[in-house]
Length: 530
Image 1: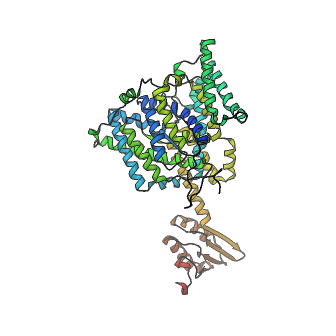
Image 2: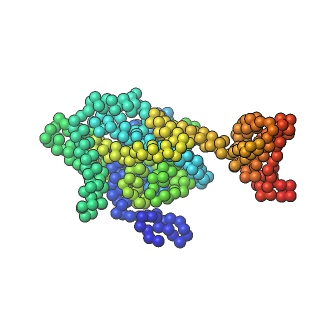
Image 3: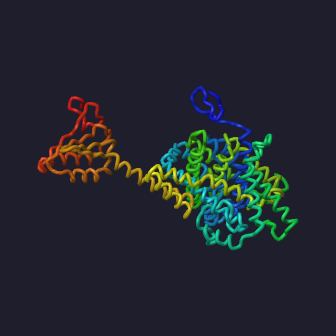
């Protein structure tokens, strides 16, 4: 067996991680370009120091990336936690007390990993996970349109429909259209053209595959804005429309800018409540994002979820100790990683190293990058996640798959990621229960014979359906009740069957139970086999 195109298989039969610097290093650069403004934007929205977002990205990439069993998911500060962080700091009255809650939340996550709580991720229906990916794609497109037009009122990385300013996703798009800046439109258009055109040029260039298209797009957009500053200054995008990394002279400046936990408040009930909230919400978002990343993995690898919880917990313990924001696995950066062709966690780890280097050495250069250029990269990524053909594919799978998919998309777009997922899961569970109702009980009629067959296990939830079936049976027929295929039949259902058999003669119905020596259920086993 070769390793080309698929994961290598060890003697024990388990898949070894693929590692291809030729693919992983360019992918790391793409993820870095996506992650940098998101880390800064989420820190700004959370009311935390901007460097706290960068440090979280470094921890999520290097530490969580190294410890995680996921080959493609990327961790860092998450937009879904911004409201919790903002409210938590305000309630506790100090950022150091908040950091204590982050440390304790990480300890909780490690504990959940040892308790094997990671299996909860597998209870989320596949249609809901697909809906989440499509919704994230649409959010990327909708949220980046204002940045593409030079309207940067909302922070990078925001995923919520309602915004702190009082507006919403659609009102921002309207405001952006009214106040569109020509320079931003030009930068966006040139970056988009470079992004789409680079794929056609790469095959003709030796070593061109080492230079990712998003990097070309960002470079073209940045150079275009610099040229505008010299040729047409009125169109140049100023600092408020560009990446904004705080300038550091050296590593000592970075260390001096960090905050540390206030462990004197470790037993404060408010701190403990916040720790519980952070630990649980961060765990749920991480499990969902990793599950989605596994769905995107072309090699169909599966992440050990308990190990993921432990890795995230260690990351949050370290984040709290170093004054950073809490980390989770995040689907936007994970999607960028997959789309860029990453093969292993090397990409995730290197992206974290690049974030650290950017904070220490590259701020003057990266602060020239226009947000409109980054918008081109994110909009294309969003299109890949939310292509119309996905809607058609889900429609062909039937209503039980299509309805949770669409409702999850709409719910996430109009609320936020976690609320939308919860709504989608509830809808998915409804269709699962409904499917069990329909498939557990099969009724067929052939002349004067009615066959009532239990095709699978029967719970008390199936009792109403069974009562309706028995009530609808006409007189002068033979009813055969076959439960030989069911391993479990609820006591209430058995009583319902006994009542029907007892009352059937009075209704002119002949009823009998079909028994078999191989039946797994005692009620339908022949006497000799009992």
